[in-house]
Image (tube, rainbow, N blue to C red; front, side, top):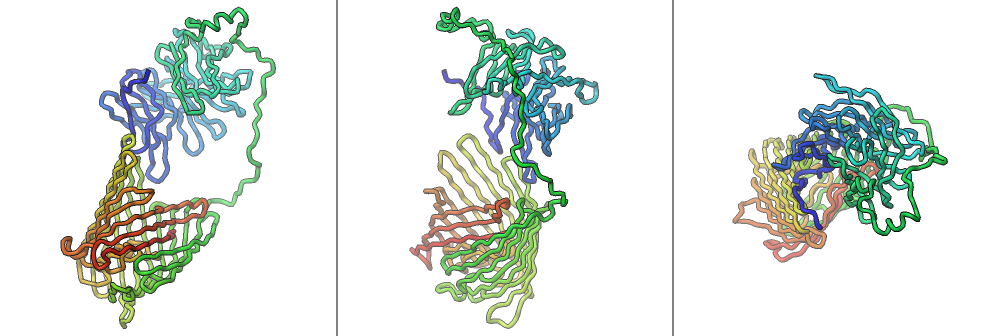
Length: 616
């Protein structure tokens, strides 16, 4: 009959919980999940799930634990701690989260699947020797007031040379008597096996197979009385939870009638006679060679590639090339770009680089660009015709959590604006700071997300000083294959008026300069640059998924919500920032779509747009 779910632990925020183990009180479970360290790396940590209130209390942070099993008193747990290529046998205080190393591992002999004995005096675990996994018994020596330590070590090696792992202790008063229940590969397929063991210091008895599956077993676990074993059985469709009554497997209380009739004809002896034990053979899977001893990674081996850069929209199109250089881990990436095209769009060149060999990451750009929006056919903001050259630098510190992330970015730029057709140049100095945060929540097939981005900037352009702030709030929800997203962006500017520093909507973003340098430009390629501008701006967007694309309604206003609107209905396909330095792929972002204009001056007009950009 179908099982009744008594309690469920879903990953409301972050990754899923795994490897549940009941604590002795039967009301709490030890659970595991992968937790981020904040710098992009992830490690396993354990927590305690309370069935009474459904909450999870996190026990460790950044410990790198695996295979945690609670002790008989429920105050400690034995586990494997893996870090830097070494897996140690450790003990964890469940009240404080303190981790104590009982037996260190080595790169060639890691520990795995520890199990404390019913009296907590011994720990059984698996460890490889000569290419074969064997069971090792480690004596636990308690010390009042100080962490426990390991005493005697004993390896249980069988003459057949087969791997044995995932040990579980059998209670002395159970139907099978004292011993170890292990996963054995003696028959070529992983099956459950009993190793009789009167006491940890005694010689083990002859192994006795308990299952004969064809797909393999894993994860054996016993109830407290040792009357049965639960395990996972693998087959073509996945893993099933199986239960084997240990008393029946030995005493045959519920024997199959057909087998009873056949018993006089065929008698099976569970004992094995080792005729020719096989010797384990360890082979190298790769050819051996000398290790390069030239020293630290440094800038890494350089790789080079050429990528196309292109874009197009309401005001025309542009195209160009980017020479990209990266190392396999992306420590230093630089790009040299050049674009040309319609005079209405940004043209020019830039050299940009990002150094990720430290935290925060540092980015720098040298650029020279030019734009003539006065050449547009129907919207001609002549005051924005400019040649702009300069340098920008920024530092960014991202922080990742389980189900959330945030980041801080700060930087500035210095350059010179040369208004086309005007005799005077203007020096432009900017500084900015940004804070972003994202939270993701999930419950079964339903999910929700919330994101916030705050940008503040100030600077001086010629003799005019200015300041501005921009904020964006985005939310999303998904259920049953349906996705809804909405975002709202609002900005306000103060200080002395400068046409170049006013919020300006429309056009294609500058592909050569990072967005924070020109934060006042709020682009949409389906509209020409300067469709609206002012000291305040409000933009909102609502979208859903339709045939693999985002179907959206977009609106922008910079002169008052009721007096002016520029609404678009469109479909957009986007490839978010994809960065794979190991195969020499820099930050590549691409999107394309079509948009239908609802409001004047482009009412009832349909435009296509698209582009691909590269960043270091």
